[in-house]
Image 1: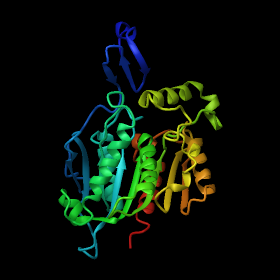
Image 2: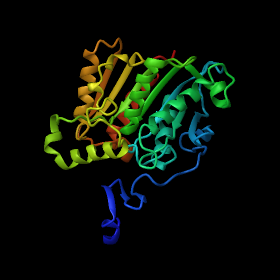
Image 3: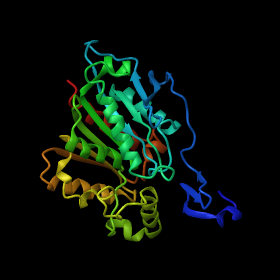
Image 4: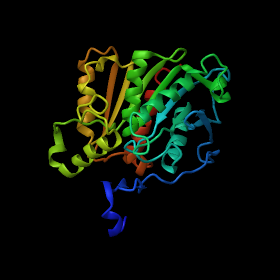
Length: 323
C-alpha cells in the first residue's frame, strides 16, 4: 500500500487493484507476477509464447495438450481463444493464475488454446484492449489455409470449430469479439460458442443487490470510467450490452453464462441471459450459477467442488460440437 506521502499525490484510487499518481506513475497491487511457458508435468500441456503484432509488440500464449488421445491422429482439435480478466487494467495472460487455469482447461477439454495478451489501461485506455483482441483473432484467422505463422495452429487447430471464452473483463471482451465477429466475420473461422465467466457488465441504474453494495458498485463504475475515459457512461453498450439495440447480432449459435451467487456482477449476468433470450437471437443460451461463490472464485480456489463443477460444465460446452 502506498504511504501517506504518495497518497497525497494520488490521481485515481482504485485500491485494492491499483493506484495512479499525479506524476503518471501506476502501482498495480494484483496480477503483477508472470511465469514462463512450460511443459506442465501435472496436465501434460505444453505452452509457448508468440508475437502476433510487430506493430504493437502484442503477444499471446498458445497451449497444446501433448496427450491427444484421439482415435484419429489426423483429426484437428477445437480452438479456444481466451481473454483474461483484470478490469482492463491489471493481470496478464502470463500470470500464474491464468497459466495454471489454461493448463487445466486445455487438458480437460482437449483443445488448442490461444490466451490473448492485450494492452491495458491507463497506459493504453480502452478501446485498445478491444482492438488488440480483434487483431489476435485476425492473426488466428491467418492460419485458416494452413499456412499461417504458427505451426501448432496450422497443423492441429480446427478453425471451423472455435470457441471464445473469458472471465470478468475478459468475459466482456469475449462478448464484444462475438458481436464484432457477427458484423464483420473472419474468413476461414467458424465460431461455435462463447463462454462468459462472471462477465464485467454494468449499468447506470442499480439492479438486484447492487443498491445494497454502494461501495463496491461505486468501484465498478470508477473502474470502468478509468479504463475507458471517453466512454459515454455506464449505459455505453461496451459495458451494458442490454442497452445495445443490436444485441441479437451475436455471431455464434451457443452461449454459456457463468455467474457466482455472491458476486456483485451476478445480476448483470442473469439480466444479459434473459435479454439475449428475448432478443430474437437465433441461438441457445445457458446459464450456470455457482451457489455461495464470489467473483472469479474458480481462479482463487480451483480445486473446490464448485470450481470443478463449473470446469466440467465449460468443458462440456466447448466440446459440444466435437464429433
